[in-house]
Length: 121
Image (cartoon, rainbow, N blue to C red; front, side, top):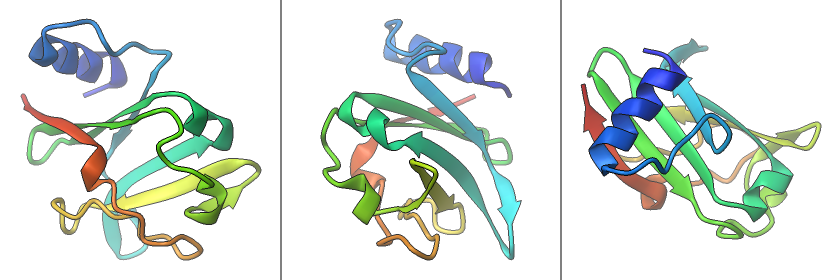
């Protein structure tokens, strides 16, 4: 699975061309220390506009579509670990229903409320 394929699956499921290469980030499950999950790297300025994320779990054959609306997360620098103006986020796949950023330096922010849909392929 790659970003273009995931965008196509999500757009087909939504029955509209909402997502594209420019407004969507894509992440696959990767290992981090003793955990597995998804990395999101979001420039702080991007929190001022609508951001879409497709997080793919190839084992489960699912793609989760997250959307953070413009200005929905105020002061993101206080919620996430930040390096060079970029929010560095790791969502653990251990409990996929929680969808929480588990990195030290963050506030354990839950992305559950940003879940738009889950697409099976």
